[in-house]
Image (cartoon, rainbow, N blue to C red):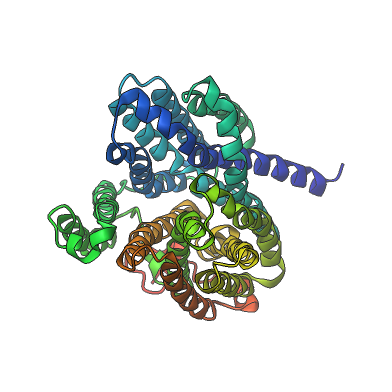
Length: 473
């Protein structure tokens, strides 16, 4: 067997391992829904408290993402990936054995914190392991996990729920053990850059900043959007966010090992990518409202309305690996520009012709195909090209943070638009189409294929204090 074949086989084994870890985390999001009625009945909680099962996970996932990513860049990929999977498994066990609802929330928080590093570290491992001409395809396969999870998750949940809702979380344990065992033997250690003092002040400020953002959005009343912004349940969190943002910039510019390298915000290509990630998250938040639109426009029964997402989910699962292959051949600008245009067309059709079942299904398929060029490989592909090897995990985590911010704001704003128009979700989807037009405009400004393949002489991962344009001066 030639050396090249052996290297390819090794890379494929690594990719399969990463796929399993990411699928485990993604499945948890997809199958937790069926457990909610049983959890509510067992612990006797109301709908508002029950919602914290999602909120606790999202909050700790958001806060943990930059920390786990930075630790991965400093101390190597393998051990942080194993730590993340172990924490996720521990959180799953806590939820399944919880004697009270409060312990369920603690378990969900641990799950969210553990899962926060799984996808960014997996993406960084691909950057470390795969040559540039194969990274797009590898990222595309990982990106397809989320579409697959939303297809398999409800089916798996339906099979396990009769055994008890706890099994929807216990199923994670054998998968996590297998992932950890194979990770120790297969995953590369990755770069280690442990010199310098860890940026504790930056991490604390960033954690509080992200928590303030998440809680500020989470407490908005969509039925009284503008009024709730001025309420004491919301505005203190926004004020804290606005105060902490310049404080974070000040601290990070002076840190030896900044938790967020300022060089990762100096590149125009990267700033465009963050804008695209935010818009993608905003658009993704609209998917939650597709079943409600089906009920209102088509008269679909509420119990079966979620099946209207099937064309969208199928095209996400099929489109992600296709987008990855196109990246290796044509570069990110063509793929992202095509994806944003297709998504925008689909959302516009959905907003105008939702009362036609064939057009509703076609629109969903177009939206899914377009989103697969944003939420999967392409944005992460740009980050691998633009960030240095020592910043790959952090760069991937920034994509997660901006996407999550877009999801939080999008969910609140879309709900507010629909409520303000008496439940008119078509109008809300028209807002998403407007955001899609902005994404198309941003995508036209990305680097072309030739510029993207040029040697990264100004890689922002090499930034140090005193650096102005990504180069040491």
